[in-house]
Amino acid sequence: MNTFKELGIAEGYIKGLAELGIQIPTDIQAKTIPMLLGKTTDFVGQAQTGTGKTAAFGLPLLASVDPTYPKIQGVVLAPTRELAKQVQKQLFKFTKYTEQIFSEVVCGGDKIDRQIEALKRPTQILVATPGRLMDLIRRKAVDLSHVKTLVLDEADEMLKLGFRDDIDSIMTMTRGSRHIWLFSATMPLGIKKMIHKHLAADAPVLKIDKKNIVNPNIRNEYIRCKEGEKLERIVGFLKARGEQRGLIFCRTRADTIAFGEALEPYGFSNVVLHGDLMQTERDKVMRMFKKGRARILITTDVAARGIDVEGLSFVIHHQLPEKNEYYTHRSGRTARAGKTGISLALITHHEEKQLVRLERELGITFREIA
Image 1 (cartoon, rainbow, N blue to C red):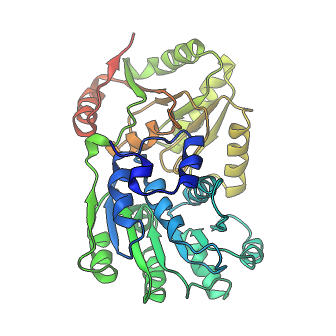
Image 2 (image 1 turned 180 degrees about the vertical axis):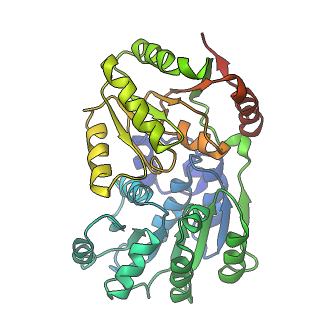
């Protein structure tokens, strides 16, 4: 198995990775880093959330930056505010023991005037949501003329959220000396058209097998029960976990609110996160959870994108997700930085076939518990 040193990663980055508990490259890191490190090439990577994409593109991106040149040399586009902030945070942590590289994050929901002021400082990597980046470009607050690398993270999600025109504009205005690294979990027609229009015809394509994407440190378990028994079974599980913290996933906004209210009488402190919350409310919820003022975060799949909270011991699926890749994203909130965790699904009779499908397509095995 490759080590980061064998992949060509500099010692300072390796030390920063080790401090984050990242010592052995994931499949996508082992295959992507040699393709991108020190090379000016377009690239397409098809991989789910939770495979280690940020380090796969982040380490070569950091290595491509000239620390002595104070202009924006790399741009990372992400679909959501939470994911953009998570990526920038990771890049910052990777460089703890290296020559300083300045990165900024700009996204909707934060005051644009503060972002404009921040961008007056030296910035070498800019992480952004497409809409906010276009706003800053229109205000002439961002100079992309020195960009060498443009990374599209979760490109299919950006198209789903309506950023097609913004992404097209950004790729067109940076055309020239830059190359594009595009990462997407799926390859719908819109992504294929984007690749054909903006990337080199000989751009290497890497597809990570779905059977290699689930963290092996996660124990996948399930409980058979009727719909009306789910609350009781989850309460029993939480009592058995002592003070351990985790997430509970529901499919809809209404489900998250209802389950949060149902859990209150049992004395479990919880907060609820869903897509209809204002950004200030979302920030307040996440601050409370990250600071440990709430033991449980109840959320939907869309609202949870980009959540990165240390020390979560478990993830509970009140209902299984609609898409298999969401299971990977959900369960990946636990067992981070080399730790172990539990992913527990509450299964009714009509969900048993979906459980079998998850096992087959993701290459995992669920263990039934009483």
